Amino acid sequence: MILAHGGLYPDSELSRLRDALPEECAATIAVQSIDAECVIDACDLLARRAAQGAYDETLRPFLREYHISAEHFEDALTLLRRESLSQKLAVEGGTDALPPLRCADGSRVQRMRRPLGVLLHIAAGNVDGLPAYSVIEGLLAGNINLLKLPSADRGASILLLRELVTIEPRLRDFVYVFDVPSNDAASLAALARAADGVVVWGGDEAVRAARGLAQPDTKIISWGHKLSFAYAEPDAPDDELRALARHVCETRQLLCSSCQGIFCDTEEMNTVNALAERFFALLREENARAQSAPLPLRAKAALQMYCGQLEPPAGGRRVLRADGVGVITAPDSRLELSPLAGNCWVKPLPRARIVAELKPYKGYLQTAGLLCGRRDRPALSEALTRAGVVRVTRAHTMSRTLPGEAHDGAYALHEYTRVVEWE
Image (cartoon, rainbow, N blue to C red; front, top):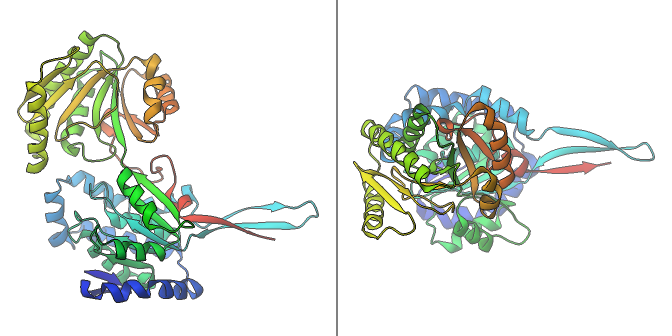
């Protein structure tokens, strides 16, 4: 299904609608513009209707299938509320005027932020926030938005965006949604040719593919897959470890901000193993209360953990596994993806080596959840951010979202606009 000009079209219309995009987008840009306040008004009404259950028939099965908790869904809706979007606009600037520059002869150069023009959003399939939100950010920046749906969307984004343009008809020529398979290279290349910027949500392969599709003069904005972890002092209290275990079980480690493992502030494997055993006991308890991870994810994680148990321990490596969750301890300090589905690693990383060990992963670092005393927090936060971490939180708030927060260390509205100047 395709959304264009506020209407739904069958996939058989893809070629016609795709080929007409450059001319239609140019015509829209020539005579129309978006007021950010009309976007905010429409999003606020959409969020209120969603909270009242107006779209449950489509959204609830989607949330159940991908194990998105009610709390995470409420957080997502909060981001669409008037207060959140107004704060985002205030923090990130949108298309606001910038302070003018004064020339030596006394004349002034006016400066404004203006939209890039047309954005192609290539959404990821890990459901780390609905792809519809990426389009809303593009709208706030004044752009025409072309959304390539991920296979995991199941109609949720096309429903919400169709409702949005129904609520506010002035947005109809600024929102297009295409359910194009990732192997349809011709269609993806045509969409990229129509765009001034390509917004990629995904890992290295997705970014490389987008660069191959786009023209040399097309801006690539990548929100890549990131890795997040916890950093704990050896005597981290049980209540903080329990909160971290609850976070792991609730997110199933599928979000970029989910904890993949714990670095312990020590060089001693005995200390690492002691922390791992404490965390493993709490992880089993929290897992018993949590909703089960999707079966394919559990099966893959279980096989990986089982194979790890069969391997002879080398250099102090251990596997703790029971009740569908597990903890791997290892003597190295490498940052890596966990087996997911409630299975973490615990490794040594003394604070004096934080920068040296983590700096090589600077392009992949996102959130670090700290389990430490208040007195140590500033120094550890400073070391982690010097290494390349862009977000330091408490352990149990690693995946919380706040209006005005940056994406991976950058503001979306800055990326989706350009500074124009005229004398």
